[in-house]
Amino acid sequence: MEILEIINYNVDFKSNILDVSFRLIDDADDTQRTDRIDYSQVEEYGYDLVSQDFDLFDDIDDDEDDYDNDYLDDDVELDEEELISFLNEYYLVNPSSLPKATFF
Image (cartoon, rainbow, N blue to C red; front, side, top):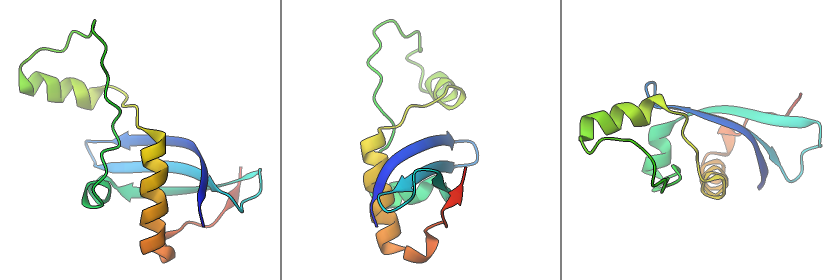
């Protein structure tokens, strides 16, 4: 069992949920697996999936509260290689949590 590719993902930091669709190496091209994982699991496994944005023209204030609000409201880009690593480890430890493949 190994993740071949991430099809889609979304993180809702307000509800702390990672929605992810992916395909395993052994899955057919017209199938996908979709899961909802509590984002705290990512942190418990020691991963930091949020890509660092080094945009020099970003207008985020230095005030920490304003930064947190801006961070939560914007779409967050995840490091897909780290996401694949996390999912591979997560499903290795929790094989019964691996979702069934469905046609899309």
